[in-house]
Image (tube, rainbow, N blue to C red; front, side, top):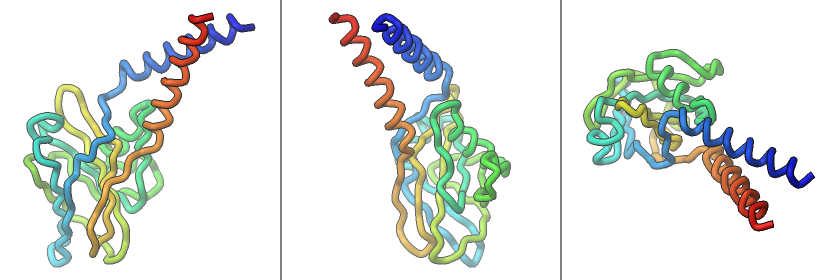
Length: 176
């Protein structure tokens, strides 16, 4: 019975490693520093954290604006595709929360035309255009008329806990 459980744990660990080996590079770091909206021109300006245009966004970047927190699941790169396709105007989630996107953002600050309602909360996701296809699971959350803040996806934490638990089981099994 112990050998069966150990074998299953090994298979699970190998599966986790295989999935992460082919996934796009993701991080939980905040990439968006700020967002500001000009109601008269209906333009939203999004500013990246200093230094990203030379590293994770060396080839430019994409961002998408949502009316509800987008699914930023790391497994299968679902979060990446929600933002990447959202920047092109495709609602990859199919739930009608995509408001606007910018597929060819460059430089520290970029703008997109979108109509926002004062007092409503909005979410911005970003992906970098480099050879590595980097992206962040941190979504910039802001309420039009107030300041913004960052949120991180809980799936990243769950993935880390699963990986650590699997490694712990392998270490315990090896000691026996």
